[in-house]
Length: 200
Image (cartoon, rainbow, N blue to C red):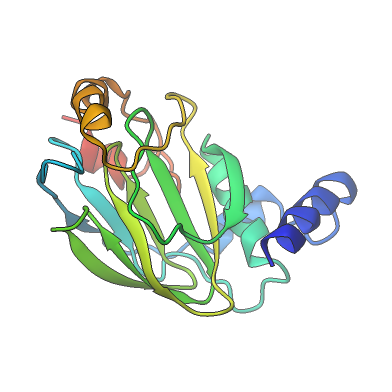
């Protein structure tokens, strides 16, 4: 399925067929209150010592979208969150120590554990958006057969993937606080969300 989605994304970018414009994507956004969770360093997964994990439930209306993944790509891109991909969520524990990440659930539903072994398992479904500050562990526990996720990153930071080794942990606890805070939320831009929650 993910190979097909990558081909679809490439075709849409070349032809424009199936893509919604940024204005159309923005019109699908609902004003929802963020849920926030803070996770402690468990010795393997550092999580983020300052910034909370943010979840927007039902933040984007996707019911009639011809390509819901394209909606997230346009929405995230309009707020400067790029380098997007279409896939699922890895079923092993991992985190990013040098960049923040947004996950838009384009299709299906899943149970995802955020925060590492001692974290919290959250149910997400189509239209939800999770924003993971650098260091936040995440792992797919169970997903529907049609699960499709769009990931994106702010312009600042460098992608990496850590799996919880001791050597990674030592480096990560130093790099995580250095990751710049984005100027815009991937869903609400400058109007709220992490702009309000992550900035002093």
